[in-house]
Image 1 (tube, rainbow, N blue to C red):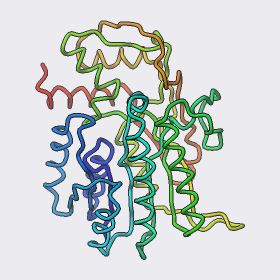
Image 2 (image 1 turned 90 degrees about the vertical axis):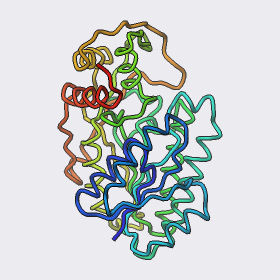
Image 3 (image 1 turned 30 degrees about the vertical axis):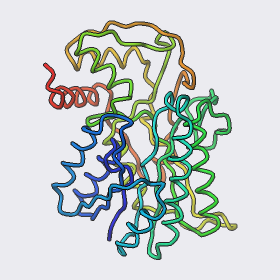
Length: 328
């Protein structure tokens, strides 16, 4: 059997591929290796994946219907899909909205169309985001909370993907699970994320920008914990529900702990062995003050149990960062 992982060269996708390969799965990676951030980091991840005999890569765009259809048709053993490819970043969605609608919304439809054509597919798992909670101010965020008030186009596209997927599950009885990720961090991370930008600036002796004057809290989730959750979900496809409900689920994958941004920076400073010069800035458009995941459902249904504190997670990230970038 083969598991398709889209966004295989990306941060979470790379780690998911490694975990699947480690347990003996065959993995078909899909990625166009675009230049949203430095492709050299993506190529370094792919170089590591290529060492595994069970890994194959198709360098194609998820919006290319013909190429995706051909890639899927070329492997008759596909029984699982982990769809992680997307145009990421809240702030960039304000500058380049078309990229988000094309990649996130059209890409979701192309993958779902390809998925429903697979006769033996057990499960379609895809990435959503904590950003869908938007203006919701009741914490922790629960899957039953309102998600119809997004504050960024990125969040709106992710909410659209959830609604579109529900339609496919209803119409074609396609087993699907959407996962709302909460600020995932760790080694091999994305260079556009705040913790990565902070680390780079601190080691280069440059100031860091701290938004909303530091009055921010995030549910920081270590990548290994998220990957364990993804694999547990993949192995447990939803069954047909009662009263005609589709085989469709949504879960939060967070750390179930909200941390002040200031403490997060303190821990990162300790891990890097250097102090940061902090420049306070106002809140940025499209951002929210706090995220906090209620993980009761994911804990109950598939044993999701995040264990990594930011003290341990940031130490691992800092060790990787300094080794990968040759920083002192």
